[in-house]
Image 1 (cartoon, rainbow, N blue to C red):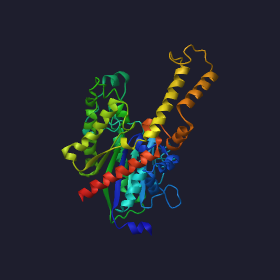
Image 2: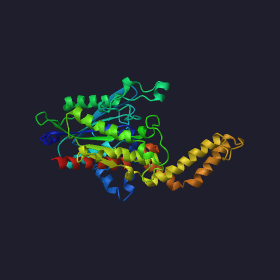
Image 3: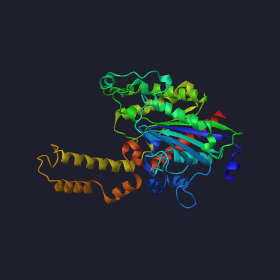
Image 4: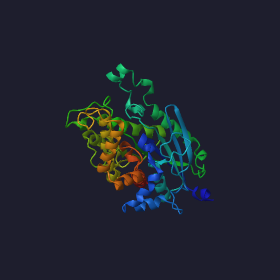
Length: 386
């Protein structure tokens, strides 16, 4: 009955694409941490069902294309947790990405049944892996040629995979979404792009610049992203498709890197182009970084670095002379960590984080905030167009 009741409106289709942070590495166990902050406690309530557990959407379905290496595949069904990063595309990975709260927000908006088409793979660049046709041929660098890397035939492989999957799902939406009514059809309602880390750390394609000139380093990324937006719209036959750019924000307000800050600006830049006014929105994700967890994680990194120094007889470490036994190193490290990280901090990190910094600490609070922000930006553009 529920599916029949909502089928009076066209199916709203949103496409979510990117690399590992679009996959999502926040373990479900970190969701409760959202409620510990009064500012985000209401967010947690929106995510929970009557039984107090993370809700399953009643009016949102998802098709998720992902994989490792050549083992790509699809997982699909009603939107629930577990559609974050997956080892097996068809099996619940125990994680969430931005898709979860994005879908729940769209359900609350009540515009009709919703279908999310998600395509994401870890460790993929825009300059090569997602390179779209309008960007032109990949310019192999001297290093590429010397090391026989980045063959031209594979450039844009993941753009083509993403587009092929989207078109396959759209050819028969009812396969994934039982609420789909062929008489009502579907509307391409939005596209979300959330990627960037591999480009930011790519010194091959984006050579390092002199100190103070980092802003010049990533101008090519802005051009590539603008080309991607044009190509997505052309290939999907949707010239004004609302497009959200999730601007990378790992490290939060103080990422400690001039290049990191410069890259954020390069990501956001296409939204300011006249041709994209009102139909492309850059959503900055740095404000959603959990500063408290980040500070504790920085201390954990100091412990990791100390372990490395002890093992490798660092000149400034307590084991510079190499006389410490493994047991002594272990004891020294335990004492060092105890002085640096309180039991309360350790417990907080365990509750709220489940992955590395480049994955936003695997913090469900962060991914949930991002998902809602992406949805709000999409809905604003849709409303303006209508």
